Structure formats: C-alpha cells, structure tokens
Length: 414
Image 1 (cartoon, rainbow, N blue to C red):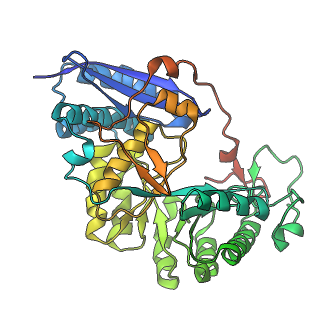
Image 2 (cartoon, rainbow, N blue to C red):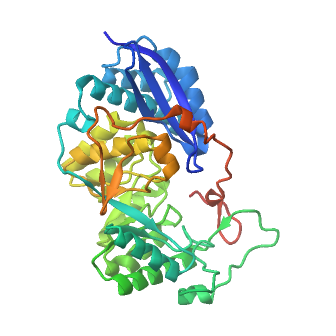
Image 3 (cartoon, one colour):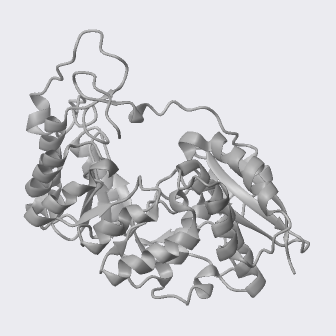
C-alpha cells in the first residue's frame, strides 16, 4: 500500500501574484503529486491550514482513497466550506488525483472517462483606459485566434468606468461625467453604478459596431450592482447578444436572478465567489443561470467539481470555470482536464502564462488559435520547479481594486 509520507506547501509569485502549491510525497520513492491551493488574498492562512492541520491528519494514509480522504479533510474540522480550508483541501485533492494518474500511467482526463473534445475553447480579457485601447486589445486576441473575449474599459465600474484619459475614443457619458464625492473621502476604488451602467452599454454598442457578431463578447459586473440595477443593465445589453453577463449580483442577493431571468434573454453566469457547491443548487435547478463560474479550489478541488459539473449537466447548465491569473498552471490544468471530459463544457477563462510562469511550472497548458491543449503525461501533466519558484518569493500586496466605494464613501462588497 502506498501512503502519504509528507505534505509541503510552496508559495511563489512569478507573475506578481502569490500562488500556493501543495506537494504530496508518497512512500514510493519518486512518486509525488502537486495541486493548486491558491487563495491569493489569504495565501499565508492557506499555508498554515495545510502545514498545521492537514499534514498531521493525512500522513500515513493510503493515497488511492481520494473520496474518503476528501470527506475526512472536510468533516474533521467540524465547521467547513470556508475559503481558507477549501483551498487547503483542494491542493491536497488535486495532488492525489495527480498521483493516481501517475500510478495508472494515464492523464487525469482518462481516469475521468476520456475526452469529449481535443481542445478547450478559451476566452481572454480585453481592457483599456478608453475605447481605442479596448479595440486594440480585442484585435490582438482575434489575431491570435481567440473568438471569445470579455470586454471592459477601465476594469470594473467607476474610476473604473470613468475614462479620464482623453487620448482616444471615449463614451459620451464619460466625457460629461465628474464623480461627486463627500468631504474627507476615505481611500478607495470609487465607482458610480449609474455611470458604470451607461458606460458599459456604450462600450458594448461600440465594439459590436466595430467587430460585428463574429466574436462572442462577455462582460463581468463583479457583483457591484443592486438587484434592480443588474436587471436594468441586463435588459439594456440584451440587443447586443452577449455570450454571457457574469456575476451580475452579490452572492447574498441571488434571489434576484429569478426576476432577471423572467425579463431578459441575456445568458447569465454566476458563482465566482461561491465556496459551497450547494450555493449553486437553486440557481441550477431553476435554470436561472446558464453557466457556473466556479473557482475549483474555492469549493475543495477536483472531487467536488466533478460532481458539480455532472449536476449542472442534468439541467442543461454549462461550465465556465473561473481561471484568472491568480491561479497556478497546476490549477489551470486541473480545470482543463475537467473541461475535456464534460459534455456540458461551455468556455474556459484563460489568462495565459508568462515566461516566468512557464519556468516555474513545466508542462503548463498551451494555447493555440483560441484553444487550450494539455500534454498527455500521466496525472495533471504539470510540475513545479522548486528552485525556479524560489526566485519569485511572495510579498504583501495591497489589493486596491477590492476597496470598492460608492461616491458617498459607502464601502461595497466586490
């Protein structure tokens, strides 16, 4: 019986974002697995959870009992489904799948039943300080073969939606807008929901006029609107045939999806901030959403994500796993293995990999002509070069974009 001999965490930031990797070493010499446990805003807490909680719990256990070990890790803390614990569990879970694939001599997608497709359609993020910059970004991605593009201008909403750079095309509403703040306004990433909504409609209208309907556009609200505002934005964007409108509501306001669904035909994606698979249940069963935007490590790894994908498939809801740059190449590979085997795959968010990331993560997925491809090595197919990882140590970063405030200074959940 092959058992867990040691569990270690490796934190590295080759792109300036802290990535947490879990390495599970076994009693079989040379046999190990790696998994992604990245919660970049609380990376040190995840490291503590793995090193001080999961490692003592799991050393000596059989590596092949993935389902039992997942239940054991989740239930042994009594309180569960928080983002720190879930990411810690996910790192171990993905590493165990990596080990199982290596033991079987198969890629993980073969263990899950085999491919439904050869490549995975990806979408990229197009942003800029003005419409001209966004246009150029879109064109660059089209030239690379991408046909799914998320469109933003000055990122999410507000300052953020107010294009202060006068060099280039701007929305007419942005040209006439000045944010009206209070005296002694606290520090923050200020945004005006009404202005953001006007600007977004003008942005999508402009890009449709420029690029037509040969490209699929998405837009991410990032949970920064009230229910009635989200409904109005969805209705205003309906003529432009978005591929989906993402995270239109805060997780706490999910009941509003019923009203949006009844009044618009805009496809809806939701779930980036969910940490419990049950948060999807009603949205999927009622068919209030079209895509699940799940961050796999935030719900505990591949094991629960497999079940969630199957559940969504029953109701005709497709997958669009959350895949930004605060995800290691190992975590990206885990998602893509699941994309390859899921009949209800929709599209995969993809941020590419820098040369530094490819140095740290040999075997990282490759993008060609708008599709992502895995290698066919056993397991997840991606490793970590620990010596290279040391060249990019973690640091404290001030995530200014999360300090969301309305014009009167009210702090808003992003």
